[in-house]
Length: 147
Image (cartoon, rainbow, N blue to C red; front, top):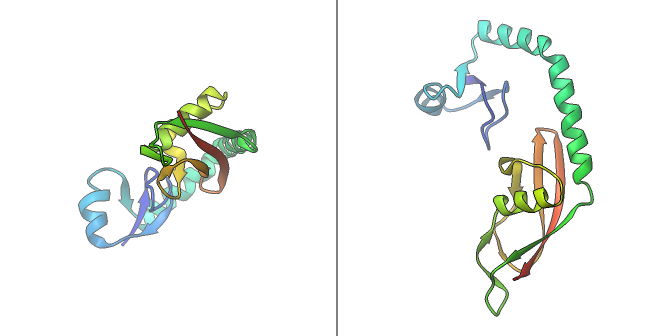
């Protein structure tokens, strides 16, 4: 079934994307939760008209996202974590800790935009991806050190 997303859904798509999902997922979860609507011809026409009217606003958001991504370029963070004698982190380093470290460095980033490829459970250097928009992405290097 084709649906139009009304908000960003991780792993599925971004707001105003037309995506194909299984009938049960669409009818039993996405539509009742208000996350999506059925992609009928009328809804698609309304989406096209809305996108025309929001083109200026979208261009402004894109410029802000690109500026934020450029500001993060070359940023290197150091995150302290409690570790064992072998260098294994108790728990793991997550997006919240990275967002806090970015805030201390002077960059405000929502933690929901930060994506880690794998859980960080050892001391070392890693890379996190910050997805501002679907095609505006920044890479942030961070080093996990023992406290």
